[in-house]
Length: 483
Image (cartoon, rainbow, N blue to C red):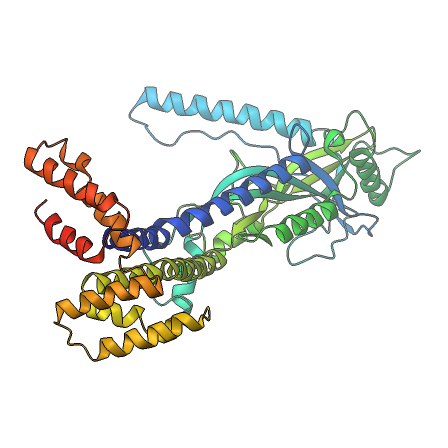
């Protein structure tokens, strides 16, 4: 192939490779690494949360003092009647029927939880402001939820308001899928006593401790038994640190965030309806924060003497978050490194090609005088020292310098003498091979041309003979222009 075409193709390939690597190649490379890390995180979390429910219970604290105060038993629910649709008997009856159903369900729940309770004591239970609670114990529930979508709208809005972000970027994804683990606290908040016994009445502390034993020991009646693992919370955070140390493009967010989860017919402690006025307040408002912190009514433990009521906090979540700044940094870094590597490779290929092409072009335009002057210089024979050739070259070179460049007859004599005494070749092998390719008769068979086939056949035959002279080669070059 013509070196000119090789140079052109090399430049095109380089430009295409640079464009691809800058626009798609690096991003595809980074994306592949991100996908591998994502699969690794998923596999590790699936292996850690190996149970059917993908959750574990563990002790956050236990054996704490118990502080309590007597409180009133929650009031029985009341039947609500419709004050609307007075002019529509059908709608009013439907509303009242719904109220009646709700009342029956609420009354049944109240009877189960409080119907046999004679006295109730409220514990100094855990909350965000009171981490030194005096309610005996607290359990933690960690649940693996897989990939979940989380909103970052609030964080971006706060960055804009604080000046950390100068302007909204339309390319920012406000919702991101993250490997998510929920964390919920479960703790006793009240103790209810049944009918007084004159022979035995456990203290509030004893009641709380008996509930703890029930939930954490190997008891068939405990709903936590199958998923209870002592020390699993510490193991969990250690495992997350281990995963983070392997991953480059994901970080474990160890600061919990609210899940914003709501439950149907939520009730807070002592069977009180949860005051929630959404959507009248935003997620950033103090009202919502207060709502998030309200513990909810949960399970209970009971025996023949008392019932210990559990509360659970609204779940918060931990997650593996993409380290976007590192992804952006590596994308830029790899683009630069790939561009440098491609440029070095390109220059390593193109420079020798250009040098060779330039030499070839120079040889093509080189006169016989210039060629003899280049090849007969005595310095040419100094590398592989040969006294006889240096003496002959010195004599020939002196004659050449005394000859006019257009003196064809004298130059022909000098070239014959140079070929004979110096054993030089005036015909460049590359130029000879290129000319043979050009005059090959096979080139003119497909689009048949009898005259060109005849001429090409003659020229190819002359080029192929031994002892081809330089003058013949030049003559064939001129004749080949007719093809």
